Length: 203
Ligand SMILES: Cc1cc2nc3c(=O)[nH]c(=O)nc-3n(C[C@H](O)[C@H](O)[C@H](O)COP(=O)(O)O)c2cc1C
Image (cartoon, rainbow, N blue to C red):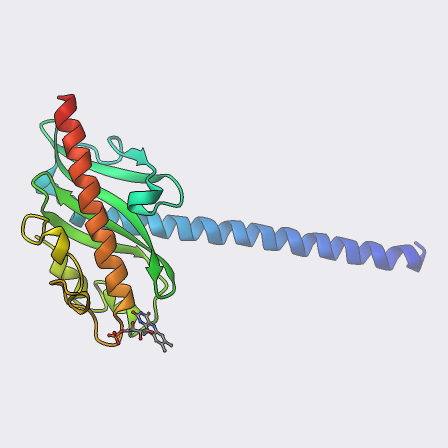
């Protein structure tokens, strides 16, 4: 074969193979990240909606919700519903705050029918290691202060970090991330109120 044809042909084949390889590896990475997120969520669900608070299939009863204004959703999200004897016992509500130091922070808040928080999980964040990322449960106990909290215990006016005149601890040297998460939790409590009211009106 003429070398003026052979060299470009070999180059074209190599380029094609390299891009195909890159595409496959990118697909695999995306799949792996999605799989890891799913595992994290399933683990988190066990704490958000503890076994003793539901007897239903959480995945089968999940609903898709999309509330950009109240819950900061950028796309439809999954709401998990724990039920006992077919009556709602706990909701695990996803929310996103764009007010993190480094952009979006995705959280999930478990809230019992009486408005009490089971636990708050940080699902995704990009805050600074050693500063903003102390909002994560395995980096500090900051997030634990919200467990068992409710709008009955702490009213809307006080549902802020101390720096802003509220009752919740911030993290010293990193107020932005805690402020963002604290506000997002308040929003999910408001959503929960509305959701339970609608159910009440329907039944
Ligand atoms: C490199 C760098 C990274 C920072 N990362 C964060 C962060 O992830 N979260 C945060 O709340 N503040 C972060 N801060 C600090 C904020 O800029 C801000 O000073 C702080 O949140 C205010 O908290 P304070 O009122 O307790 O001082 C960072 C600052 C610097 C210089």
